[in-house]
Length: 329
Image 1 (cartoon, rainbow, N blue to C red):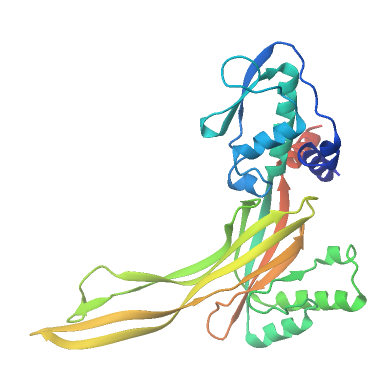
Image 2 (image 1 turned 90 degrees about the vertical axis):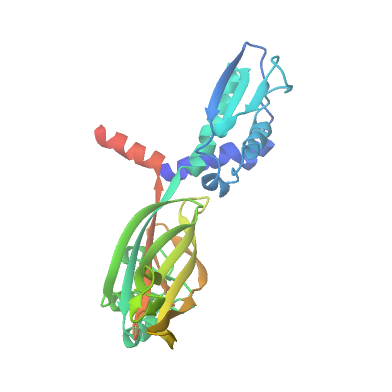
């Protein structure tokens, strides 16, 4: 309930149709005061998803909602001044200052979001993976780069699923649980900011050149493994998370040695290089808050299939503060 209320207040304060239709508030003739607002937490990557990447977007929102009076350079009359480090200096009446403070707080709430994501890398053998594919009710059927939604057991009663779909989800869950968990990680990610959700990269070293079987320089290295990068965006009603997922993987497929023989008398020269293959794909999906999605990786050890299961949960600081406050009562 609180989550929906906060979302409604924030959206109403910034872009709601009621705002668009409301008459601008009139500035009064009382004494002008000066205040400085720190907009840095609102701008940049965090604010981009809500349209606040630059301070000009904040100016636009202020002018659409509040009448601050005619603005001119100098020391007389109301002023909006952009300062360094994302600061906004405002010279206006106390009433207008309060309206601007409320509006900035509402805009801050739009970016006061994060997504907690638990990522499990699960290893299956090809036969088990094929069995899991057949059990899935989703389109995509676990193909590389095609994320599939996995409904939780508690979520099945909330969604309009047929009896066959519920049985399919239950079967898919049971099969996935038989796999080997390679690694588990959990982290909090900013809304609208691209981040690495899961990664496992093994460093492999090799000597590029050898003379008489001795390296001529420090070893070189290459990383063999995967990195799953994601862009999470919370929906306006704060019930769903859209995930754009991109796999960035490299697999070492061979070692190539070229023997040049005795280039200089008494010195045998050997050149070593690694043969690698770049793997990866991109896919998108929408996941309900607290639900799960699975992404099959193109990368996997020989004769194995790796699936990353992502479990996103929306985190709202205001809601967390409210919960802690209630616990203290």
